Image (tube, rainbow, N blue to C red; front, side):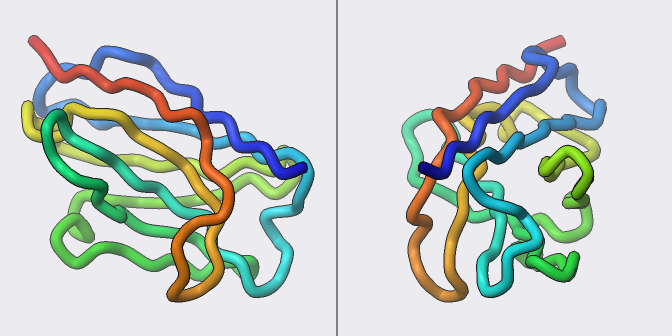
Length: 119
């Protein structure tokens, strides 16, 4: 059973950098053919794919967020991390980590973590 769990600081202030970590169990993030992704959902809006890191460490980003997004990993802990810089109020929402095969919807999701943005 693959499980993903997001963790992070909770409240973020505008202009700060949001940092979230996803801890994976039941699979290795270095397994070939899978992408380890970050997806978010602002209040009242649909899901937005933010980016992903592949088994070999290659990163992929949503062009609309690329300038502010960085995804990295710690293979010794089987974790991958999202950093979103220059956060503003529109970045508030629920953030999910997920596993997906290339060009397919995720098959495993974390439970999601609420990220409020407020000064």
